[in-house]
Image (cartoon, one colour):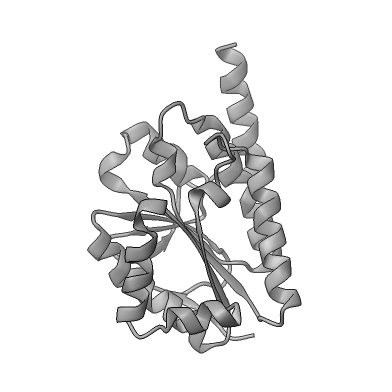
Length: 208
């Protein structure tokens, strides 16, 4: 299987990246080469996007030289909105359902003959009204186990301007890799899933 890189950095031991960007321009400067590398190696990419940005997202892929209609037709590119991925019909996030969707997407890609699936998710939905941030952190912690087992790259994209300091720290702790200012680094604040989930349970019990 071919190697893969993000922002020029090989991903070899860890595969779950918390990516912080200040603007869409910065985001696409880093991620467009990541997508193009995948397609050039015959891999599949799954893009989880804000429904308001779906067409703009595809336009940026096209402008970078990726033929979106052909890639979608071949199954090498799949673009899903939040409402068909992270969120249910009522606009709520349910982590076990999303984990199942991610596992199924990976298995379907392998069954279809693709050597790897790369997933990138726009996480702005976490700022929607009444979103359960604890459930989101639990998902981020749990998904690490699946990603490590399958050497499955996944990039969670956050708008740094929208995060409070405490939210940013909690998110950092659930990802073994960070991408800040275009640089990928191992995260010294990373907390293994079992320990992070125990802490989240303790927090929940303290306020119940």
